[in-house]
Length: 450
Image (cartoon, rainbow, N blue to C red; front, side, top):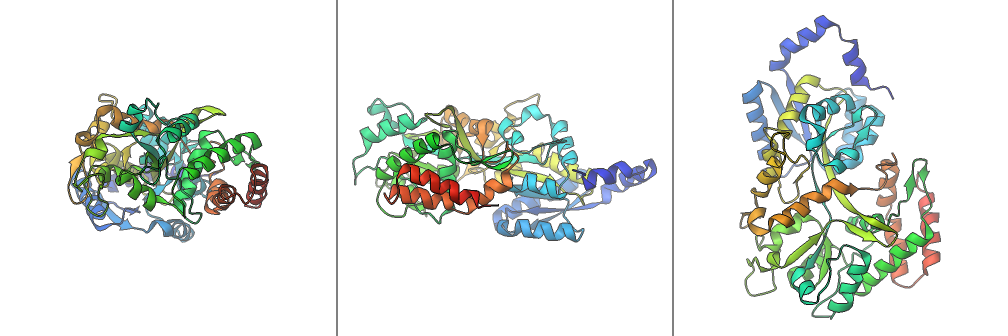
């Protein structure tokens, strides 16, 4: 693949390069961000002001709604009017590189300057390209199994990090309606169910794509996934369940285990009035946070290594960028300004850059001390013990997603977004089809997706 920005730079004469260098201090760059909530936008604008004070380079911070990001980037590329830097989710990194929208050489220069060893390996591997990396990993979060560690300890149960351990805990703790063993995602038109199922499939080593495109699901491994998920659903309340019910039941002390994002961490500690803890009479209680354990990597019987599911965000330097100025801004945002980058929403922005070569845990420490919460604030380090903080961040080291290592992220995203897997799994849960029929139907439905 020929990279437009790389070709442009290679063709610059020495005289032109020197002229551009002389003009750098006065150059403006444009930065697209999907963090468009007013308080988050204000923090990014403050960072832009600080960056200008340090370098003399103006940064225009432009909010873009995430659902419109792909369309707007494609249109801007066609018009030769891309911004210099884009903050974006994982699913755009490799497709944008293939389309020539972003510059992997520039991103790789930034990562090499900062030292690749300071980044979470999983976050880097997801954006690996022929020239190094398509984009610079910024932050992310790992999906977690949250569990009542106090109840597990009382029952002599191992942490729910394998299919077998989860089912053993359900056997001991499921006692409805006072306590449900699990709260599985069963609402087929919710993206939450798609995320949970991808995690559970990955845990058993089941992937719907290989290097050549769609790959039929392995029947034995998929039957193990279906059987496991059906047992989770049986240990859940009836109905169409998604994030809302799982959060409410866990905050109310009526669920032994749930799968959720880290955005629940402040709520567990009673810091958000719109999602109160109701296990006792104090909605601001930190008791639930104290008795909660987490698992980020789940393993199925056919994949003892297990897998963690993560949502990673990146900085891309575009094909139309002022390269030197864009690289400076990304380096600043990932180094001197990195703590401020994470402070935009620390409960969901885990540091993918752990620290510097001289201080390997610098940013993890700084992140753990950032205040989280809405109606009340406290740092994560005051709410959770160091070993739990390490687990939260460590999930990014082994994070996986369908289609990344196979170079089929675009197809995998279409498969997930089709919600075909959700629908067939729900049919199996409800007893409308048996296991082999479900696997056959999944393979038939997914093979149609291009």
